[in-house]
Image 1 (cartoon, rainbow, N blue to C red):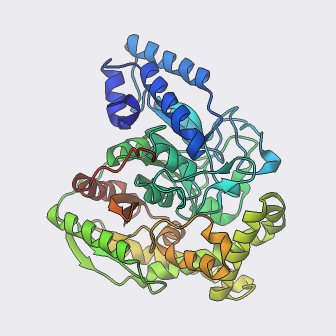
Image 2: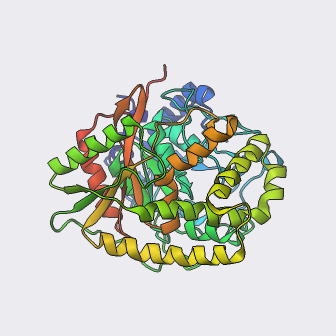
Image 3: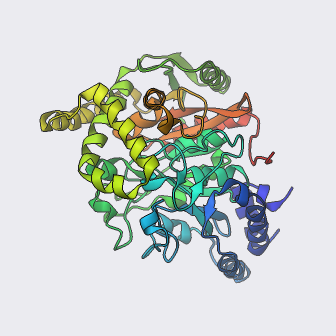
Length: 472
């Protein structure tokens, strides 16, 4: 087996035990990038000499007997909307196609401190606001499973690169499924942590914290990985208590091991759209495996998730409305069409222009839903839901036909309900259907990341290994 095919935890152990060097690992991943990235267009701003210099320094630290971080020597990518000092930060816009980040964002600083070696920047749509990953300056990223289907978005470059073996890990961020959905599209594990666990602090000069309230309160950073163990290691390496983040928490992660039967509420449908047969099959498979592992599974109706999905449309649409002129000017044609369809979908739920009273009441209702869901989950229940109500979408399905575009928003209720509420969620693959990855989502109570990762591990232990993918 080639080094680029190994998991992040296996690579970290091999480097620590001097079974192979960081230079060996980085050279293997760079070779894989050279082989498949020209086809997939997943990674940008790859600088082999800088990566190899970082790898040599990592090997020197091993030789010197220094204390090593959990990701010491492990290659990964960071996203083009996240600050990594002096590296490309275009956010998918032609106007900033050559812009370089002024510094490291907090999550990048944490990963760097954990010993990660950054190989490149992952592609994303303009403003990172689509479930597809193409933009004017950098082009389209392809799904290694099927080039006619989306690799997901907005962290589609991240999912494509990890699934194809370019890096074992990638950093992404999520305000509408942008970590979890790309992971599901490419047969990976993607986790969105509880808001505040991973700092959203940005390097001076980026001004991201002055963005809309929904961006501040809902967006999180999280990892995409090929295994649950890798995702867990990367997540807790990224966790960075930081009071500069207005939603950060002054606490470090503490494991919450299972202490008795964990109940699983299986939610198939929240009244917005019926799940595709392959989605139902994935849910049935995951439920059967969890029962086999000792979990208690029962089907639930949970309309508050549907209500949260509807609130996503109201609050995000109204927060972005003042920004629309600039976004339409800078984002390119696809962004304009996508945003038009988004506002049409929001208008079907809330009217053309909701007033300030509806907006304020929406935020108030959100707080009630958070309390209700946490009370329902307690400390011994998690939820099992679709990752999406459909298999991975056909490329550009959001900008081809208005009716088809609106159907995507209904299908994505599992993706958009979770950010509104701020709970942790993980997507994990269950197998392959019609040549495309299938998977499910697990949602836990606030700061119950370990409970959902434990359940995801039970699913992974029983599922076929899907990645890295051999390109056809």
